Image (tube, rainbow, N blue to C red; front, side, top):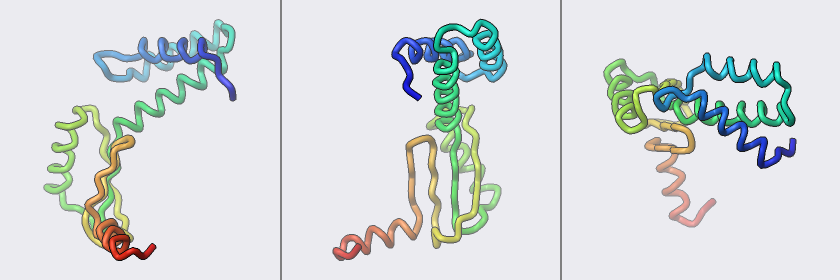
Length: 133
C-alpha cells in the first residue's frame, strides 16, 4: 500500500504520543488506535498501517533472540541478559532457543544488530578465506 508523507508524519506523531518515559505504552497504543478508528480521518487505514509498522519495529528492537547449540545454564543466561540490558536498556525482552546447526557458541540478535560467535560462522569465514564458496 502506498502511503502519503502526511500519513507517515501523522503515524509517527501518534507513535511518539504512545511513548511514556521513552518506552512504548501498550494501553496508549490501544487508545490511539481506538480514537483513529472512531474518527476515521483521511487516510486512517494508511496511518494505522504505518503505526503498526512502527510498533513492530520498536518491539523488534527491544527483543534479544539468543541461539545456542546446547541449552545454556541459568548463570550463563543471566550473565547474557545482564550484559544485553546494560547495552540496550532494562526493557529488553530475551528469548533463548536451541539451534544445533550452530555446532557451538552463541548467536545473538537484537533488532538489526547481530553478534555471531558460533562455530558455524567461524567455519564459513574460514571456508571463504580459502576462496571456496
